[in-house]
Amino acid sequence: MDLPATLKNRIHVLACPACGESLMVANETLACAKCNTSYPVANGKIYFVTPPEHNTRSSNIKHKLRKILGRRYNDAVRLLGPGFPINKRRLLLDQINPSTNLVVDLGSGTERVAPGVVTVDLFDYPEVDIVCDLRYLPFQRESVDGFMTTSVLEHLEHPDRLLEKIFDCTRPGGIGVHSFPFLFPFHEAPGDFTRYTHAGAAILFARWTVKKLFNVTGPISALNTVAVEFASTLLSCGNGKIKEGMYLVFGAMLSPLKYLDAFFVDKASFLSVSAMLCAVVEKPSRN
Image 1: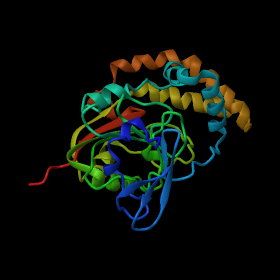
Image 2: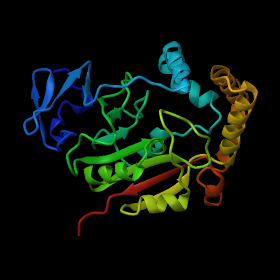
Image 3: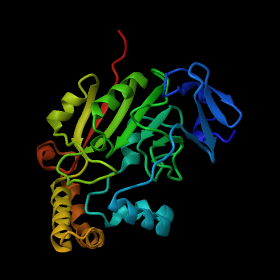
Image 4: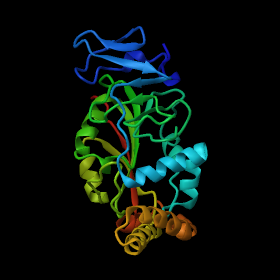
């Protein structure tokens, strides 16, 4: 069976998202003995759902750029985007080692943040190991050492429900690294529903021990992203395709300014004016 390399010896950590029971290997599928649901395994991926098509205007141009740039796409976004580039790899590796721990990146998108990380997304990107609906995580209770999400919580109608599931699937003492927008324009992928202040995030992660809550970008990223959204919206006169092109142009023009945020990142006094925040949390151990 063509299982993902990150899961070849870890089938025992998977659970049926329909009923929560263990899965067993059956031909080219993973099957649940309790509810008789089977999930196909192909091309080094496990499919717990059929991946949907992207249906937003911005996703169309992103899809075209991914085809053109290939693996260079993420580097281009970090270089030419209006927001300060977040070093996801360092954020994760400062907390947990994926080579010796089971680490899951939910909503991983088009990149694997570090070797050994299990990548999970609703969309069938090349680097994704598990295709699933994040509302129904396919992991056993207390089986995962660490979870990561980056710009995921805002795209869920009920992010608190995902965090409850993450809590259940995390072992006691396990780690979570979650980055999310605060002062950031509306962006569909395919939906966009919530923003959190640092005070709101403290409530969201109330069940966890918050090791650190800080800003991973600063006020320049907040100003840049709003300016790019405003200019491209104003000058496109309601034409979505023109707006896409203008967003890329204005984003690239203002992108050098974002590096000024290096002076403001991880500064408590700038939590109130930052585009993106990050919570590093730990599941309390049993007494």
